[in-house]
Amino acid sequence: MYMDRETLRKLELLNQLRLTEEQKHGVLRFFEERAADEALLDAVDTAEVKPMVHVMPIMTVVREDIVSQPFSREDLQREAPETDEGYWCVPRVVE
Image 1 (tube, helix red, strand yellow):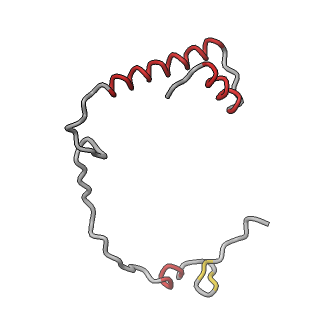
Image 2 (cartoon, helix red, strand yellow):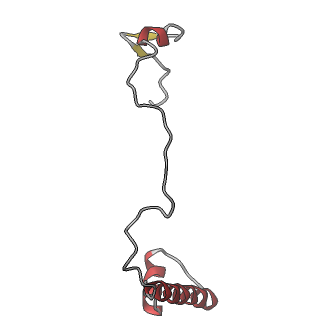
Image 3 (cartoon, rainbow, N blue to C red):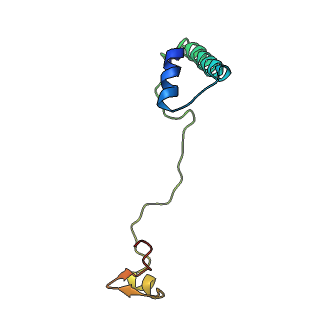
């Protein structure tokens, strides 16, 4: 990302910030360093690298996705203080 004083000024206005000259200098220096890092990465030849999402292969060990209904609505509502036609009744919190 290219960052100059004018872009930084616009961002200050947009975000309602008031940076000191020292802070502005630090932000601009940070983006200059990131641009240099980006240039180094752009110089790397990646023609033989296959596109990937993760550097290491990911193995997700999970159980089988089996649909089941271990509890019925009646079982779950048996201990509820109050129900109405299969729904839990709770105290009103918004008037």
